[in-house]
Every structure is written in structure tokens, then in C-alpha cells.
Length: 193
Image 1 (cartoon, rainbow, N blue to C red):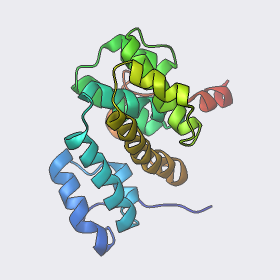
Image 2: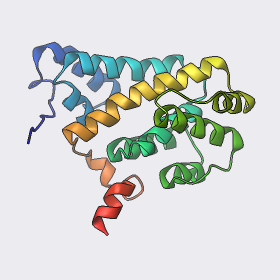
Image 3: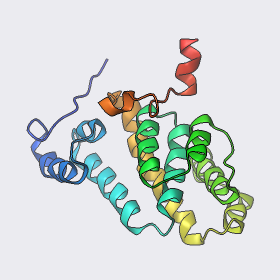
Image 4: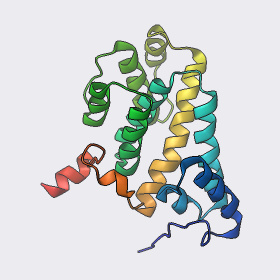
């Protein structure tokens, strides 16, 4: 079975070191996801660039961005990203009941956020072949055509991280052991039962 290394700045392939140094400067540490992505300077740069662009250029609110991220993380059953985005959702002051609903696969009380969640899930579930009705429902909830494409960009960002975590079996960060953040995917819950 192939194993992957979670690199740090000193051990990473040369082509990834500068980007990891930037990540450490931004985050205060090198997340293990980024350390795994460092195996490929291309993958690391693609993920870090998309993530940064969503954070700085999305026209949706920070809470809305986190709803889209988390809907996709949960859909893909990515335990690492679901825990990480629980933390990030709290940083942007998302309501705790919304955080719990996203993690538990339950409807959100806020109709606009629920429309966003359903649309983000449809984008990944249907691999972009969403129905006209799904797009119309999203727009009728008050989102824009630009937001449609921002959700696609968020899906691309999360596909890189979620799939990387699955393939490389990214070890969780120490802070993710906190029961308020830890999350076990439905598939792993079934296996444990």
C-alpha cells in the first residue's frame, strides 16, 4: 500500500518549500493537508491559490462560503475537512445550530442557507450537471449567477482537499481531537457499529 509523507518546510520537495513557508506565515503552522499536498508543487499551489481566492474574492458572505464548504466536506465524507471547517465556521460566527445541522446532514433552519447547501450538494452529487430547477431554486433564494460559479469554484477547492485526504489518509491535526470539532463520517460510523 502506498504511503504519503506530510512534509514540513525543511523536508518538502524544493519546489514546494516557498509555498509551505507562505502557508505557515498565513496559518501559523503547516496543516497536515498542505504537508501532504507538498508532494506535488502543482497540487499545493492549486489548492492554496483557490482557497485564498475564495476567501478574498467570493461575493458570498463568510458564513455562506463556510456553508458551501461544509456541505461538500460532509457529502464527500471528509473527516479532516469537516473538523477543520467546523473550526472555521465558528471563526466566522456561524450559528451553532447551523453548524450541527450541516455536520448531521439535517436541514438548516435558515431557508437561504439551506438553498445554498442543497445547491452545493447538487453540484458535487451531479458532477455539475445540476437541473435548471436546482439553479432556479438557488437564484430564487437570493443568490446570483456569480454565486452559482463561486459554488463551482468552492467545489473544485474541496475536491482537491477532500480527495487528497482520502487518498493520502491525512492525519488529523491535534486540535481536531476536541469532541466539539471531531467528526466521524457515516461510512466509518457504519464500519464501527
